[in-house]
Length: 383
Image (cartoon, rainbow, N blue to C red):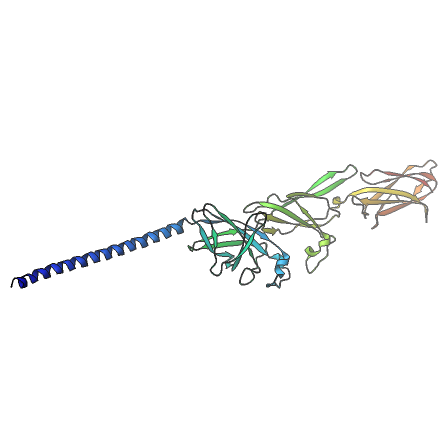
């Protein structure tokens, strides 16, 4: 009887223990769940912090224009002038964060490259190809580590990239945290002025052309100034364009140059400037009108000839030794001891050969040939 009376008490105790066990288990499960939520939240916050703190900077680019690159297998670019497009780009990256960054995509003008080549700055110029269109990535170590990569516009994209040499270039990178960093590089702006200066050469004055490109600008700095001076007085049209007539184009380099023309013109001038990125741009041409003082007379010669008639022959040449037409030369009788020396004219104009003359009759004497600041030439005459 007594044992049976204790059964309810045992049941109560067992139930209580079970309830306690359930409570403890639930509390433990809840604690684990809360802990996991806290861990997930911490991971999420850490990820957000990592995303926020990641900072990869596109420092600079370098561009090259290798004509042979446009005909390398497996890509052939069927353009008439492929060198009007860049063949490759070199991109310098730096990680400004202490944590490493992984680059999973690099785009140029919104087209992602499938392959890149990493370059190590060393005497050996180590280059390693990397396919980042699959599972590959480019790691940029923390603590301001930098990387340099090269992308070929013909081979490293799913289709060839056409990037004209005078256009702006946008570079965009994507990291494994799906951050994107981008920078736009603009071509330089060629600006130049033309002026004329006069040089006193003693026997004559000569005009020279001064070309000043110092007002040209770039996002970084302009590192090269290349000039093309087209002699439109002698140039011919090649394939519809005067600027294809290389034989009549003078090329010079420098921020400010002095040009001594070999003809009187007219001329057209254009300037190509190159920035420190390698980007270039060519200006619109500026015209310089005809100026006979570019090639002034510098040599006056004369002689007495008796065949076929007695005459004084004079020739005028410019500073480059070329004959000058349309020059008026004066003939003056300087000595006429018997009073019978005569000239049929006292001035005459040179022809296309730079030569003119005055016929002589009479006796002995001296004729002086005169032009401008040039030293007069005295010619003994026995007509």
